[in-house]
Image (cartoon, rainbow, N blue to C red; front, top):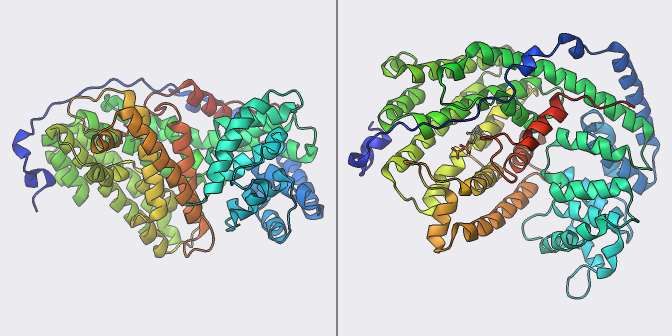
Amino acid sequence: MASVLEQHPLKAKVESVRKSIQYEPSYWGDFFIRLSPVTQEIDSSVEKRVEELKREMRKVMRNTNEPLQKMNLVDAVQRLGLGYDFEEEIDEALKQINDVCIDDDLHAFALWFRLLRQWGYNTPSDGFNKFTNEHGKFNDSLNSDAKGLLSLYEAAHLALPGEDILDEAVAFTMHYLPLIKNNNKVSVSLAMDIERALYMPLRKGMARLQARQYISIYEKDEQRNEVLLELAKLDCNRVQRLLQKELKNISLWWKELALIEKLRFARDRLVECYYWALGVCPEPHQSRSRRVFTKTVVLTSVLDDIYDHYGTIKELTPFNDVIQRWDMEAMKQLPDYMQIFIHALADIFEEFEKDLSPEGNSFRVDYLKKAMKNTSRFYLQEAIWGAEQYVPTFEERLSVSVQTSGYPMLHCATLVGLEEINLTKEVYDWVTTIPKLVYSIALHSRLMDDIVDVKIKLEEGQVISTVQCYALKKGISEQEACVDLQKMIKECCKTINEELLKPSSIPIVARKPALNLNCVAEVIYKSHNSYDEPSTDMKDNISALLVNQVPII
Ligand SMILES: CC(C)=CCC/C(C)=C/COP(=O)(O)OP(=O)(O)O
């Protein structure tokens, strides 16, 4: 069969130029390899104390009956990153809360709504009408209720498509929260929480990062539960030691592979990829998922650099053919750097197969292989468009760039590594067909990435982005296009919220990673492409999660 390039009418125009781009070297170098093993030893007395505190907390959760107290407790447990250990208690508490009629207190109602929606209940939003006037606007009398406003703001990020009242809630709270934050009647912890929320609402942040930040807020809260606070701190440090060990092993693999020493044009971002994995699979037991994810994404990053910057079109077409055929013999005709890459790729897939086959799950790896082939195919399409200076329509551009966001493949990679061994083929068929949920996270991350990159000058031979295609379609400036695309991003978030509600034939463990992938995109592409150029924020976040222990007293 003829390759995409040969079929293309503009083939004659393709003249290959090797582009070179200099990325910053890895900020972390060997840092995680050199971490001393003493700090990684999990102290058995800490383990013992953690178990005691957990037992104590289970009792507290079961014995708390007053609805608002119960809700505040569930919220604190989840926000402190301990939800994974109290699933049954939370489930039980939310079943009870679901049947309770919440009064006219804004904080209580908004918290009730958010906790239930987060847990997959399709709680109706019309209960917010009691806080609005006859024109559908929130009552200005609420503007001094700092806690209520914050809860309303957080709840509004759980909106489904068409829930205009929650758009109104975001606008209303975003107007008043910055004003009320500095009011001296607002407690220190509440002011800190408002500041955090305005920067990153709960629904959009990475769970472990938010847990680390919330420990610093919760310890200043006069109504804190001391048992819960101690547990959160010890657990955070304990999990950090486990993650350091995990990252050390992955870093040793990466060092031994020495891919970047051989392919100097590529980004060296192993630690950032692990941070990405930690955002998607935040629970301590999800070690295999993080490993599969990290190895897949770090090689995808190199693949992206081969297609975007280094490979010439003449090299890329046979390179893609070899990936499509997954034929290691056929790669001998390729340049050395491509052979080195393909070897590394084949090796990780072999490792995944070996890992999954004893539990009868090696079939999962076939799905990931297919997803990787797809990504390569679409990367090639972009490279060809770039070389030909082809200007796709917005719709054409989207059909490719949603795929090259990498998110459909990375969702699949997460499901490949998942520790739940009984996931059926139906789940993998589902993710591979790019259902609404996966499409929405892919579109969301693509648009976020392209919006932050819009200030970067197009390299010679690079295809124009979705932002530029949209601006051309509408006859508007790139800045105006960004405003419209931001609205599209908001709609994606609402669709994602909807797709995460119960019931579904796809278990929540397979859908939840989509939300987490979305949150990582929010954090990484917030104001800048912090994957390409790791920002101070990103370095600080990585240090908070993987380097600095929480002070215990
Ligand atoms: C989500 C994935 C796959 C992460 C791997 C690393 C990667 C390709 C990041 C995006 O880089 P970019 O901004 O250069 O991407 P693109 O070339 O698609 O614009």
